[in-house]
Every structure is written in structure tokens, then in C-alpha cells.
Image 1: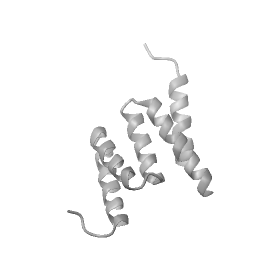
Image 2: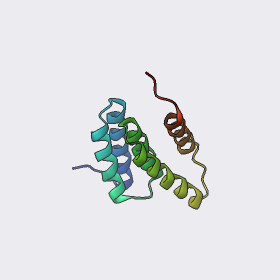
Image 3: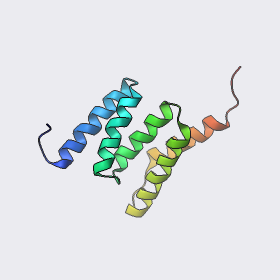
Length: 101
């Protein structure tokens, strides 16, 4: 059982998810991020990590959907999300690039 308030728990879960992501344990990272999002579906950091995880796992369409949600959340809250914009451009560029043979 985790101690501390919900915000501390969220931060701990996101830190753990980030470690799993860095270890290329994408399914574990995705599970942890989804757990955070069940408690706080407007958590921009969690959604951004989920988008990165989905993109790395080869699930680009889902990653794009998450990035679109992040962009909307940022716009509504008056924030800028350069990370989301950069990842969207990277995915678009990857989709446009010809396959290597």
C-alpha cells in the first residue's frame, strides 16, 4: 500500500512508469499510466508518457489519439505542450518516410 496523498501516489506511479518505459517495458509502463489516468484523466504528463509509450510500442494511431487529447487539454488550460507537438511531428514524419529496403 502506498502512503501519502493522491498527488504523491500519482507522482510515484508516473516515476515508476517512466523507469519501465526507459527499460523498454512498454506494456508495464502503459499499465501504470492507465492506472494514473483512471484517477486523473486530465493528467497531461501521464497522457504524454502514454503517447510516447504507444509510439515506441508501434501503436502509432493510438499514440496520435493521445497526443490530440493532450493538445486539447493544453489548449483548454492555456498551456503550451511543445513535447506533444514535437512527438506528433515525429510520428507524422515517420509515417511519411518511405520504407527502407
